[in-house]
Length: 137
Image (cartoon, rainbow, N blue to C red; front, top):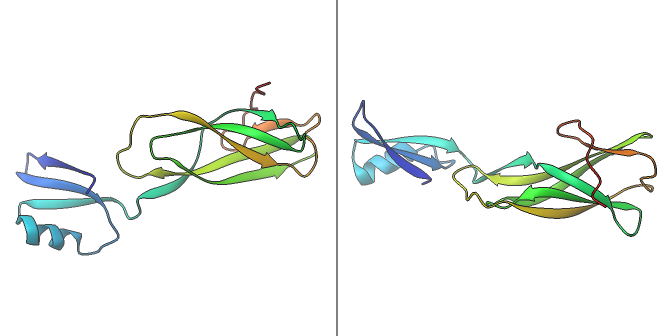
């Protein structure tokens, strides 16, 4: 169960939940009576999403980028996405975000993204927004 509320028009308690169960309404009504309705907000606790990227810096090895992105609030790192071109490098950080309520905590996290060759004069692009990322030196 994620949250509860009241539907003033029907006088029923509304339970928002994350479940894959098809019998969620029957389950709650068997326990709490017919004045309960259910609203499924998701079938899984988390969903994949691309994280907001703040900036990057070239790692000391010269062959990878250290990408700073927003995490916290129950966000878990999942994987990196990278596309290298002659003139640019496009990068995304994929995380799993909670489907229900989460804390407002926000922090910066960092992931290393290995390049096939040194960055050189190529620009770094946020693959989600299409915008050039600032270098954090």
